[in-house]
Image (cartoon, rainbow, N blue to C red; front, side, top):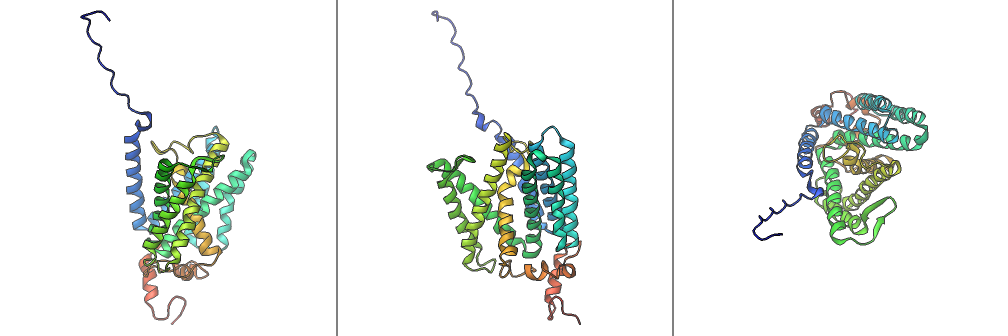
Length: 317
């Protein structure tokens, strides 16, 4: 540089690529939180519509990952999934749950190159979606808040423990970023959530162990979706949520937790003691007496009025 020549201005510090979409991510997250929180608190048909929509979108995303060039077939299967799930949630439960096989079977016949993957994942998300609505209506708001708290705390503690502590990978071939430190930190956080909700859900301290199981199920839900994306060589299930990827990317852990809770309550018969003191109760309102207590309007006040009768549900005058 010659003497007296002007000094070139220093280049502006580059914004790290990892933070480039921070504003978009924050705005998207804020919208999801506001909408989700409102629907959860309202419950009833409002929460049902949200879950049906989210479930249908995840069916479409699975189809899209398998065959990106065929949008129409995926949309048709998603629309059918929404119709079937809405019908089952409105009419009742029993043999109608068999109808959840309709979309997985049709999709397996459509996507023969990945028939088993489409069948298993779409059946899984439909059952998990049905479970979320069932939990909200039969076991009450507190149960859903507990389930969400377990999933969120597991994810947050797992992320920070994995980043700060590092260490051995949990399942490097399927999910290279997950570490044992993050997995165990998630379990510890879930146990704390279980202890906090034990009195609210009338389950006693057993909820601590159950929360750890649900935590692990949420982690496996995350890993399962990661494995599906890795199998098809895609980064995100879709690009529907700005800055976050797809719907399945955001709710994979919740789907795993919901299915695990469904197995515990229905499959293993752990249907007693759940819910808060003012919730209708799973065994009385989601068992054989469904049609007598669960109408299309999901009227939770009607549930409580039924419970107030001395004879209880099913006792005629």
